Length: 103
Image (cartoon, rainbow, N blue to C red):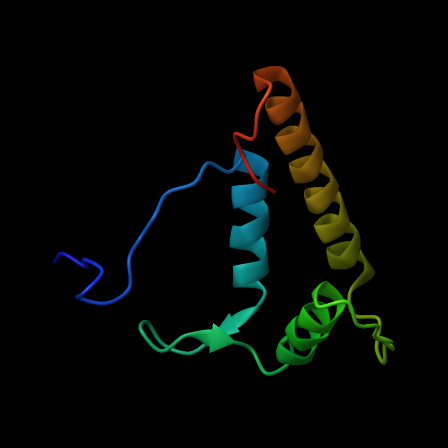
């Protein structure tokens, strides 16, 4: 099925490092989105975080309070995955001399 500009949403491709892809797969598996195929949305638990991020990106300031720390092993795993993915993207971009991949 073709989705041209007049037909609805469009798909684009952009390079990501394998480590960034693995991070995204992991946060999806942990529930960053909810809903069935074609009806997915940001989970209720994540929506306030996304809203806060938008406020910060718009020049605002937020305060986040952690009410329950969750599984420390998963927290550590996700922090490591972000660090590795960011490093991988920076190495690739620096070696190429231009913006090739995102994190």
